[in-house]
Length: 308
Length: 266
Image 1 (cartoon, rainbow over the protein chains, first blue to last red):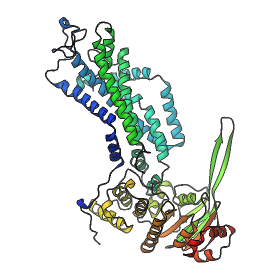
Image 2 (cartoon, rainbow over the protein chains, first blue to last red; image 1 turned 135 degrees about the vertical axis):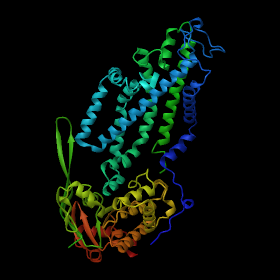
Image 3 (cartoon, helix red, strand yellow; image 1 turned 45 degrees about the horizontal axis):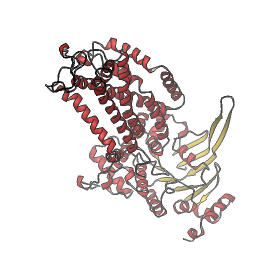
Image 4 (tube, each protein chain N blue to C red; image 1 turned 180 degrees about the horizontal axis):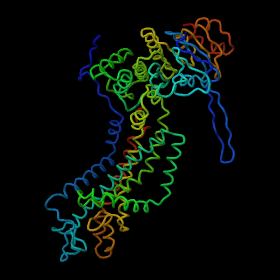
């Protein structure tokens, strides 16, 4: 018997939970404003920075040191006569990349690790979580420095094509490779709650493989809290890179990041305040924006606020 | 030979409690020696109050839990002796309809994904067009409008969700359906619709069904035979009519008396 299939026009479009959450997020003015701000920052740092009229951030001009903001250098120049505006743009690239790449790495490791731990349960879970506990106990800063050195050596050749990013990428991975611990814990707890639900029993009854049950049925239902946490992780990683750079173990000269600019600015605090204030403003506004967006996402993805 | 036979099934859970220096190990006998059999094409109703072990028993039959003792024999094959890969290949023959249609459907999967996944377990060779035919056929079978195929579970009412869950259970073309309180989470007005649907499906598709409920009036409506469960044991079994008219066990009598008189007149 042939069954008449519904045509495209007859189908009613469904609205996924993600789409509902997006609709709720759109009503949150502060979160939307923050998202626009982050978008604007990304455009300025990555696209505007490529335009021809932007000065080379590393070009020194010792005759024009500490020039206050003017038509030539809209944000002035630093102690070596380099254009501050272009240094902020290129520094922003590094800071943003740290935030996004390290968070991406952390998400990947954290969700996979936490999901497997939570789903396996029993002894496997206990061992995997004790590993996390142990890593928690080791000072993050020390580990990142060690890991960065370990990664940077052998990877030097492979990373050459990245040009000025070559010696920065190991830092991204080092931060990400250690920042997943909390994400693993969050995901594990979520998975443990979801795996008791009846739709997982139904999937088991269909004889689906464990991998399919875990990554198709369970993990997609745990992503909400992980996404919220990840959004809040981005600024904390940016901040962490800033403190590493401040200590002199992060980004190396002549590259800049917002952390380095703030550090350099702090050296001339008493005479050239704008060298601290301007990068600090970019930095803190971006961090605020990420935090507001994270808060907005948390409200939008909140289960209690969703339909029934 | 009965279609499904349970022999002296026991399931004991141990609950460990206690602190660092002292611990106690308590054993909960959720199912404590159940023997049951269902004839092919029949509906066996299993009644009992909440916490008497009905749901545990259903999970034992579904091979979602392992029994502490006893054997489960389906069509002459002892399921309790199978290893996990043999169980996986046999699973499609028995499917379950769950109590809570709000928890039994993956909230991130559309009707299409849910049903097509279930169909493909039995017929992995289907192409897209054949798969579409199968999905639409299933939806029509359970009384769902095919235009909703791209919708998500939260966009449906409780009754419609239970229809999706029933369609999913039917998708792998099982022989045995275990329905664990399939109507108790639904509005009374919807309950009879779902009950009729289940009854029709069992008759039309030649299924065998274990229908679990705490509500004797619901079980009486749908079941051919009734088993009464009380504290992990079956206390009485019989043909639906005779059991209702002439209950033997004290607990069955209490259950019967607890059914509102107004309903029993209908």
